[in-house]
Length: 239
Image (cartoon, rainbow, N blue to C red; front, side):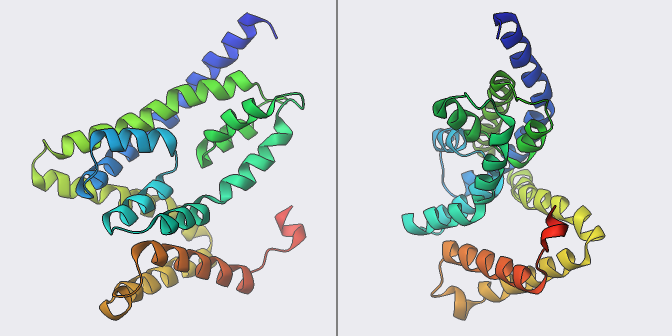
């Protein structure tokens, strides 16, 4: 591949990744407010977001940190919440050049998120590694900068605004699940059941001996297992 083509694909990746980066910044700023409330410093938030590019995973991690959870809870919760990225990365391998080295595949896989996977998998095959690098260069810094600035401004902004921004992240999650719930009544029922179970798990008799991290792990495994057993996806439907 000529240098000019590599540069072109890199620049194209940055352009295509810019809307995702803007969305990441808005979400991660709200996450930064939550981090600040959990006692994290701007440097903590910067390092955490540079190494972890998943909003659900980081939100769960911050909750575990705030509740003084164990490293085991942290590792188990991240595995359960982010396990879908294993499947996405595996599916993405068929789009890459077969001769691409393992190290370069790992670099591309590091920045695989729901939005970026959707963008990469729809590109012409074989997928240009430089296109993926361009996306990573614009999205990862915006995600990390958002959380860092959220923590910083959490100490500057009035408490009323900080409290409002603290729930913005959860409002984002609600906005993500509402559209598919309107089309899929099974998903709506599952969301309602998850809300009821989450409330039950928050009650004093239960929360007294189950930590925040274990609640996330138990509820995620329980709900996903129920959905798989009650509404299994047949092979022809999966295709």
